[in-house]
Length: 119
Image 1 (spheres, rainbow, N blue to C red):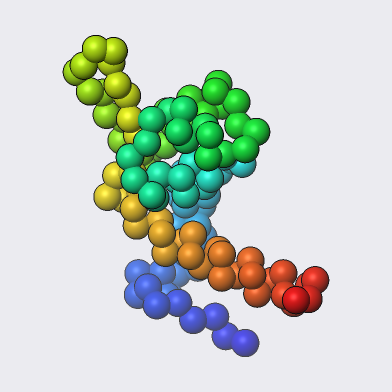
Image 2 (image 1 turned 180 degrees about the vertical axis):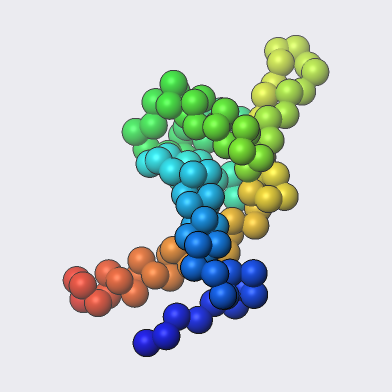
């Protein structure tokens, strides 16, 4: 079977394809980043709301991963000038485009489960 990609920039260059995959993995690496992004796909949330959505994540780890995602331009930290100060997180425009990746992962996961485990 011959590999076919729809992206002209990487179609003729295997190294570019691998580099793009590595860039994606560098931003999304780790156990918690995709669940955090999935939680934020449903809109702006406070720290405690994100933590409540993700089973077994510690506050320290959530804080670290949110900082990483913010540094990589996936998450935006919004500080409301109020008393007490309200801090919320939401996906950037780039972060919102990850929906296609997550949908593809869900689709692949369901097919893989069906093939390996059965219905």
